[in-house]
Each structure stands twice: as structure tokens, then as C-alpha cells.
Image (cartoon, rainbow, N blue to C red; front, side):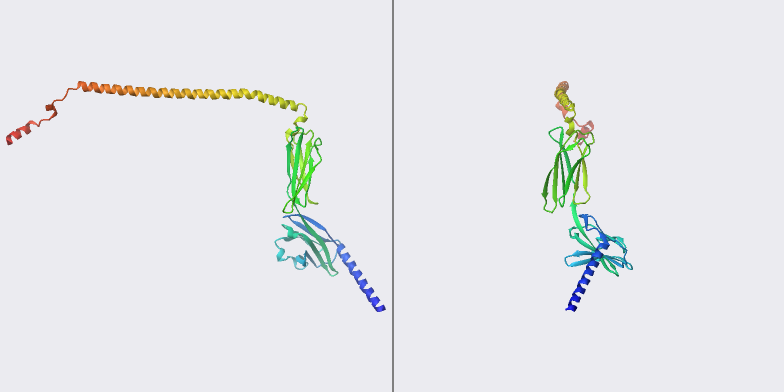
Amino acid sequence: MVTITMAVCAVLHVSFLLMGISSGQTSVIQTEQTVLAALGGEAHLQCRLTQSKVVHHVTWQRMVPEGEVDMASYDEHFGKAVNKEFREKVEFIEAALQSCSIVIREVMEQDEGCYHCLFNSPEGSFTGRTCLQLYELHPPVLHVRASDSTAESAVSCSATGRPAPTVTLTVTQPDLHLSPYSTVSVNNTNGTVAVTTTAVLSGLHRNGAQVGCAARVLSAPQIEVLESVPEASAGGLDGGSEDRGLSGRIRMLSIIPPLCVMVICAVLLAARLIKKEESRNLQRSESMTEVSEVIEVLADTENNELRKRSPPKSEEQESPQPPSHVLKKLNFDG
């Protein structure tokens, strides 16, 4: 009985020692519990010993349902090595026996999960654990539009991300004021969430006033855009601006009728000139026709006069006689 009790005590003692070693190993390594990375971007994983240890080999592993998969390692004799499966994505940033870090490029959804860094020493293996969490955030789209009231503008900003982003509106001048936000979220089929925040902008603003919209996911860096406030949004805040606008419209209305009269007169004048030119062309054509007819009449008259003056030809004249020497020859032959 005493032997069994001693054996149990010995087992418990060893177990407590192992638990202490394990707890001590974990506290020896400093690393980030969660690393955020943008989808398609880069993820930086780092482990560092808080106490100086004799280390011969450092290994990075990826946790999978089946266990662990070695990704890369650094050895004091053989240097850096990245397994073939990960050579396109994994690269050492710092390769040392006391501190080691890697980068995973173009991270995708399948890269999410936890990773181990193992520092192998004669005392045992010191293991650190860090988990990679991906997020997706697209640049926000900001619109500032003048509302029906000349003293206000409608502001809306939309951002899409995963998980749902936080959208915040800001102003660059102390005299501008934003009403309480109204936010609407829409879940997309690809797992992202579109968040739209709207507000009403009021207050007196100077030239160059802007409204800002910032979108953030988790603790990742925010994305901010700026949009200028339209001039019309504060036109009614100046005491004389409304009168100036009214007087301007009156001047425009007073200018339009004379312009219309001038345009009509110009059109009528052009039509009259075109008609007069057509009349001149018609007269020229008629004159040319009359001249041609006169010339034809004169030509016919002259031909008739010539025929009357010429004597009619006699038959003798018309039938030619052979020469005299031909007649003599004919008489001689006869």
C-alpha cells in the first residue's frame, strides 16, 4: 500500500514538473496572439525569446486538422530552408536563433488559422503560437449633395468589408455640424457587408471646406476619403446671398427677351437676304434666256436675207460641161 502511494505521488510530482516546464516554455516566447492581414496582402509572423537560450534550430509550422505541417526552418549550421510547398508564399524576414520572423504573401482565406514557432534547444522545445485573421475592406465612397435647403447638405458614405466595417463621418471646420448618423447594413452573397452611413451637414463654411469619411475593420488601419462641400450648400447662410441670387435671376430674365428678339430679327434678315438672292438669280436666268432667243431670231433673219440675195442657179450651171480638149477628142474619135 505504501509502495502504491509513493508511486502515485511520484507520478503527480512529475506531472506538475511537466506542467511547470510547459508553462515556462510558453512565457519564454513573445509573439502576437492574433495577426490581422488584408485579403490579398501580406501577413508578418514573428516569435522572439524573452530569455537568452541555447538554440540550435527554429521551425515554423502551420496548424491543420491533421496536425502540424512544417513550413520553414532556420538552422545554425544549414541556414534558412523553406519547404517546397510554401516557397511561392513564405519568406524569411529575420532568420536568427533568438528571434525569427516570416512573411506570408498574397494571403487567402485558406491561409487563415494558427501557426507555431518552435525554438529547439538542449533544454527542450520552446513553442509560441500566433493566429492569422484576414479582413477585407474596400475604399469608402463619399457623396456630398446640396439639399432643397440652401443651408444644408446631404452626406452619405458607403464602405464594404468583411467583417462589417465601421463608417465614421468628420468635418474639417468647427463651424460645420453633422446630424446624428443613420446607418444601414446589407449582407452580400460573398460574405462581405455593405454599410451606408448618412447625415445632414449644416453650418457656415468657408471655401475649401471638406467632409471626411473613414472606414475601419477590427483594429486594422482605416481608409479615409475627403469630399469638398458644394458652394450651394451654404448659400443661404449669408444674409445677402439670397438677395444676390434673386437679383441674378432677375437680371437673367431681363436679358432673355432682348436676346430672343435679336435672334428672331437675325433669322428674318437672313431669310430676306436669301429670298432676294434667289430673286436676283431668277432675273439673271430670265435675261439670259431672252438674250438667247434674240440671238436666234437675228441669226434666222440674217440667213433668210442671204438666201434672198443669192440668184438661183440654172440647169446649165448646175450640170458641168467637160473641158474643150475632151470634146475635141470625142469629135475626132467619131
